[in-house]
Length: 103
Image (tube, rainbow, N blue to C red; front, side, top):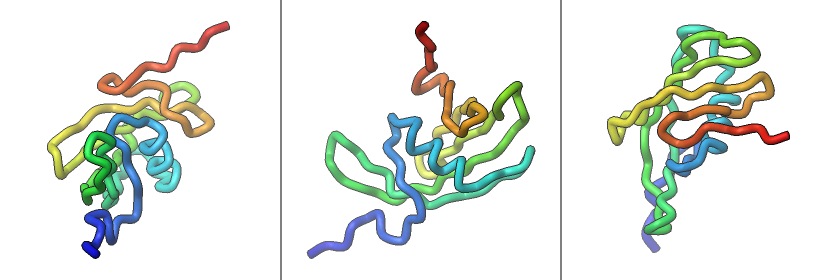
């Protein structure tokens, strides 16, 4: 049996999901201007396969009740900012979504 391509990874990512990015950010507990790299098993739902990808998370600044982070996928040359709220969930990721609260 072939070895999965996500072997050796310390994180998990679904590229279209903010939940998996929230989990990674919560484990780092970064201070402002700090960065951390993580090798993740990235799951492609179209092929049902994993592949290892190197990602970097950087805490840019405090913003109101949360923080602004920079996500960089160093394997795929993809990057964007993520806004995290006070409880540790991403509320905005321009390339992925924007959370809307409904009364």
